[in-house]
Amino acid sequence: MKNQNLNTFSEELIVPDELKGLRLDQALAKLFPQYSRTKLQHWIKSGQVTVNHVVAHNRYKCEGGEHITIEAELEKVSSWEANPSQLAPLIVYEDADIIVINKPAGLVVHPGAGNSTQTLANQLLDYFPSIQAVPRAGIVHRLDKNTSGLLIVAKTLIAQTALVKMLVAREIHREYWAITTGVMISGGTINASLDRHKVDRQKMSVSQTGGKEAITHYRVIERFRSHTLVKVILETGRTHQIRVHLAYKHYPILGDSLYGAKKIIPSMASDELKEAIRACQYQQLHAKRLAFLHPVTHEPLEFEIPLPTDMEKLLHLLRENSKSGDDR
Image: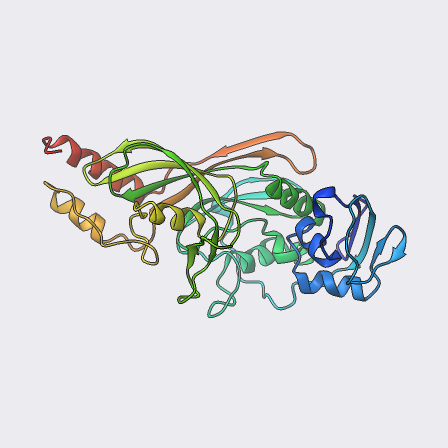
């Protein structure tokens, strides 16, 4: 990678052989997923991309092995407004290149339809204004609004580019804990492609005829009368992947209103447990652990955080219920 400042993106690379046959913008989208296809096409059309030292055109088909140079002007995230930051208590780690945040359930990661200001990205723009020069305010991967836990933010373009490449190469270890409805017999691996739901466009679904590759590994941590605590490790990171995959296996995450089933009350449940289950307003899913190499220093980093208080309380009540006799 070349030297970069806040206003430019400079990169030199050799096209991998596995991208042979793809149109140039398609290949660049694979290599730089942090940028939209529209932006990459604009860079090509405006002469900011060269192939073998010749200005590229968008119709170019990659052969593999070409020398690509990008010298692109970046825009500020002008459409996203800074919002008063309340990030300080959420920061698990910070240095000159990255921030690791413990996102609470209920906080949206980036602006979208119906929520243009009250998001993590808006707070990042206030907390660290220079991040406006980094695509998507430095957000490398996202968590759903109602999923809690660890999230990496890049403070510089160099860090973001490196982290995105690590994600694509599956070099960032992401571990989640979830409480599912139903008692799992054992763990396993779910390898089922995901695509947008044909009817409800807010949902994703398992696709038998296309979609994007999605692989989820899961292991049973603890069983209860009608629920299971599982550890989930993502190999890929598709939208709603854990939620869809577990529901596909008929073990939806407790409290997931989009993919979940009816809330099940275990036999012999105390009034407190009944109320806790009925009160679950978001999926009991927590990004508990992250492990990766620092994008600049290459130092091994590992972070692990406790479960949210309400999730811990629910587990305590489920354990107490499982101890109160044995009717299984």
